[in-house]
Image (cartoon, rainbow, N blue to C red; front, side, top):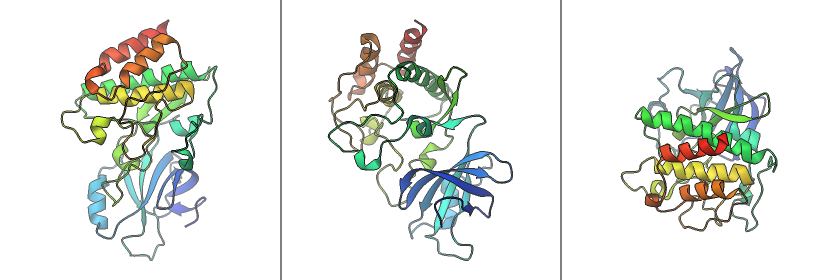
Length: 287
């Protein structure tokens, strides 16, 4: 298949732009050709030991409106290792957050010299980081209050809207982010594919009884990176996320730097719970 301007899913969807990834694992922005709605397509290749029926069952393809499973290979190709895509429709009037912030090149993940986010602007970044963190935090708090078990979050799962003044705010999270952005349990891959180093250590180490302090960890890293343009730990580990307390000093007002620092301790017992963390973030933004 060509990378762009290709129809898939029986011609119902059209690729518009490759957003992330290469090789077997890619993420595209597309469009539903019948409704015109924007969709995200996590494009994959199945291992030989997984049947199409099993893949459909695991992805919840029988749940209309949540995710759609579409074949993205040649029409006469019956090989189960051909490419398939998991499609999710974007909420109205929203954009994919990393497409706005900009992505680091995958090759620069382990470079010794930190790389600024491509879109970083020192004037707008700190207030937008607070707005993004605050609105994302509200959605996370709503999910946890409703009993939804969330153990980590990252920009790839977020849909945002732009205000008239250019302010950014998170409007929604991906409904099945574990499939759209890190479906490693469907394939034979072990590392999260579209992940940007936000995994809390207790999640990476598969510890029991993970609570919402894991969300505080991920959210603190994201806010710090959005506000400064730089990843706030000295070392990036693609497979696990941070595992050592090697935070870098944040060039931010002390109160905000202290709040984010408290959320990024490797030991979850040293972090605040989500509710008091968000309360302080709200108070900071109100001043």
